[in-house]
Length: 253
Figure 1 (tube, rainbow, N blue to C red):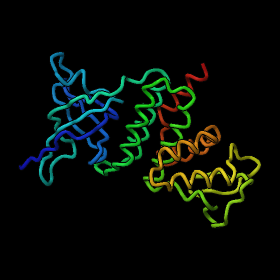
Figure 2: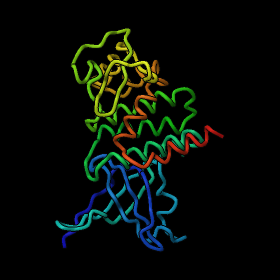
Figure 3: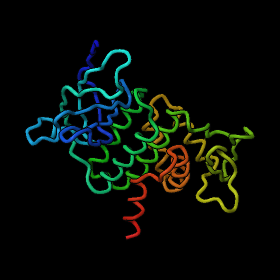
Figure 4: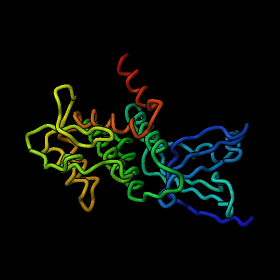
């Protein structure tokens, strides 16, 4: 069977699990090939050169072999190089990074490339590795919005979804799974005004959307968190996101 090779592909590791006593399967997010599964043979051995390199939330360049037609969708890792540029996130930054990894694991199909989303993710990880302070919440909300839009899971935020009626600037609206954007009712939590939703839509439509969306999220990150939490969990399905449950458990302590 013919084997092709992918060389020095920009990548991040999203998740890892046992393949054998000495090997791991790595679920990776790559720039040009999307989410791919690679088996790292012998990586658990103390002498493996891969051990100090294959870490989550670190920029890597990976090379692997691809079997010919009819081969496995789990490929064999050939080489891994740490690109460098920032340290490992810690504390809240680490937990937030693992949360983003879980979202990508749940929502991205294998080998469906999203180069723009990869670049945005790389920028977010760099922020998480710094003393990010109050910017953390807007950064997470911006990534969630851009992820949903890239995957076609976010309706237009410039009109009510079912009626296509225009938004009123001072009226509050909520984002509901399977119903999109609608006017808020008395029992709804944390709706945004029509003006805020329209500002987010304008930012999402910008030529370079990430900085524009980040600026828009600064003004409404708290209210937006409630809206996106429900929508993301709906599309991720059950069970509840493990990192989100861990965040809630830590907050309860």
